[in-house]
Structure formats: structure tokens, C-alpha cells
Image (tube, rainbow, N blue to C red; front, side, top):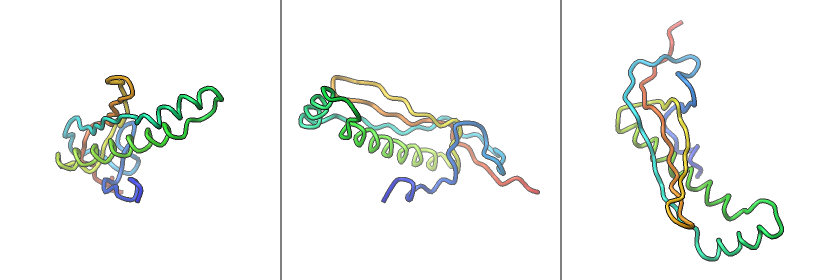
Length: 117
């Protein structure tokens, strides 16, 4: 099951309140962090693929899974705070040591309500 199917928060945005909603309460910064390491075999295969060029599928899959986990943790953090929406959502990554990366998803947890017509 993909992270999208598990998501219970109605909305993530990279800007302000989504269309049709207004922010009722701002709860504060929320985040989800994961640290992932590449295995020796995957690193070796990736190294060999750099000779030929093109996409390195093993690393793309690793990045995809890391972002999914960071999003799940972001959502859990926002829900613990009482939020039902995350605005200003972003990803960031940092290499902690060789072959090890930190992925963080962060934003602002808010409570949104539908705009009355």
C-alpha cells in the first residue's frame, strides 16, 4: 500500500491554505525525519551505472522510500499536534556520512475548516 493510500490528513500544500478552506488555528512547525544508508551491493551497482550513464534505479527507489517514510512521520507529528493540514510543506536532505542521508519533510501544522458559502 502506498503512502498516499494511508494518508489521513486531507491536505498537504507548499503554500497557504488550500482553495475552499481557511486556517482556523496555526499549531506550529512539524516534521518527519528518516536516515537511510545505501548497502554495499547497491552502491557498487550504482557506481557501475555511472560509467554507462542514465538513471540509477537502486538509488531512485531508496530516495522514494525515504521520502514516503518522512511523509508518514510528518503526518503523524501534525496529527499529534491536533492538525488536519500541513502548509508550507518541503523536503530537505543532508549527507550525514558517506552513503548515509537524512531526509526531512517539514511544514506548518494547522487546523483548516471549509469556507462557508
